Image (tube, rainbow, N blue to C red; front, side):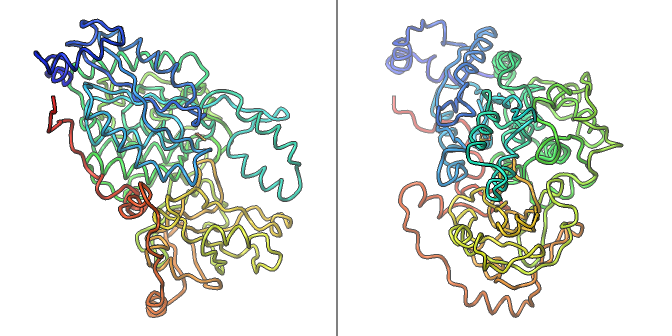
Length: 570
Ligand code: FES
């Protein structure tokens, strides 16, 4: 053992202290030798029936436990707050930072030598990794895996199709009854969304960062090999404890750059930007919004996955999974980065092969030379905004149009289908007050649906700009995360209906055609939001949440406090 076990500060003590720590473990029917002087491995479980994507995690935890026992450790499963993307109101993102606090304090306060994070639905991954980073003990991530591909009337159907079917319902091309059938066809197995949405993006993120065993990103939840990976992760975390490999040994600046490169190549979710910055700021690695443009500059899109492409995560797995993607990216990656199994990222992918070039292309013949997330700057977003060009309409990537402004989501809902709304195919929809503070919680409403009257004319996309986020399953020419957000009194706060806006993704710019003087004049008249009326956690969140370009973490949570427990009451 490289280091003294952290858990021995609990179980290795003599007298009253040791008695109390050990005795109450024994009420679970566990003998001394099971947990004393062995690596104690926490299994941080986001299982919840209110998080359907993670509803199979009790079984997955059993597989991890088998691995921990096999390697000579002692597993203890503990629950943390779970974040179900589909059921939580007003938005699961409001609670990402709260869960990270739960995770951090649960790990630090308990006799844990290492931890396995069971992550699945979108926010559960960044929340758990952020919390674990602030403690920095040996950690490995096991993702829950994607659902099997859904099928409706013989055709594949996934989460990205929800937006399409929603527009078809509003355009009266399908009925509500058919929609019910589509729901059942789409969610036909355990697991998280089967497209390259945020959950799959996060699973790819942890694998490309080196935080999971190779293959973690794409094995379907229903595939028996997901359990095998969980068991092997249980074995590996015990070795990590024995070798003293902490999160900070893996999460170097180079590892973050690898994750940005991989995310570009897979057409990952725009939410990746916010979560990766938040994780970097927890572990103490410098990472700015501009890095996302510079690092992935020449990386093309080499996976053909919805919402940017055609296929599903199940197809990615059969085509070779993320290791096959990383192998294609070998000339871009920092190949010497260490991963949780003690091997470099190159050692992990070098024996992998691609089995389907319709799903994973070569670098020389990519699905799209344009990839990843482009960071925009300009006088409409002084601190930046993002767009995913691979999910956008190419002809709209350079576009000037008149703004149609909605001051908040309620106004959008009440006016979007108003026949008198002055909007046409050249308009730019602007939605304010859906940012971190303004909503609060930065919901996924940025890909706002189009006006019914334009849908009826066959218009399928408009430039849309907001200070909110978009589901990783969403698509369209959608500019997100405008910072500073409308609630904070920047230029985005004062854009008005009729203003001319130019989006130029090629030049990475987003500008409003107003002089500095005019903007200044408008800002002087800007009325800040009324005082906070919320109590409890939401009050704390609004007061401390930072802007999107800083990862939307709370200011007092940045950095790490380590694993020492300064006070000891026994
Ligand atoms: Fe959980 Fe999509 S709703 S991953």
